[in-house]
Amino acid sequence: MIRINIRTIVLLALTTFLISCGNDCNCEEDWDQSIRYFSDDLVFHNDTCWVAVAAGRGIEPGPYLQGNGNDIWVECE
Image 1: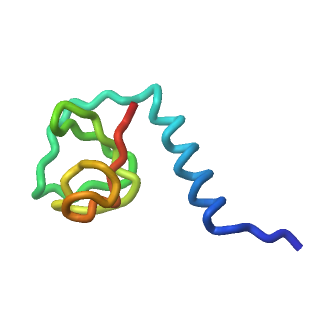
Image 2 (image 1 turned 120 degrees about the vertical axis):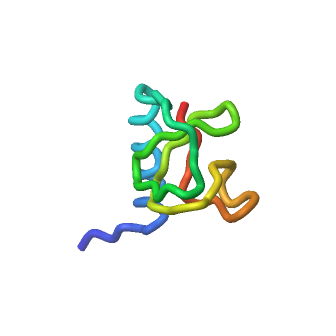
Image 3 (image 1 turned 90 degrees about the horizontal axis):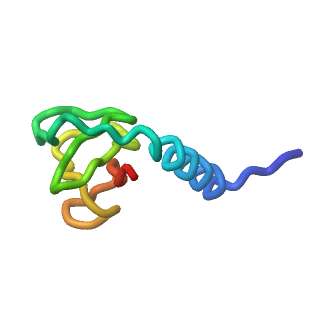
């Protein structure tokens, strides 16, 4: 029987996502709090390109869990 730790899955998914984002950070759209964003959407906000890792609306892109509870955006590098 194979046991998979949920932390391992999340870490693997986030790492894969960040690696795949590394070559595709072409942010042309400015972030708008009234738009509902979905996973893989790219926005430009505060001189930085951000990519959504989950769906959400009105959550300002910024460092993880800082400010208003950002948990859907990661910086696209």
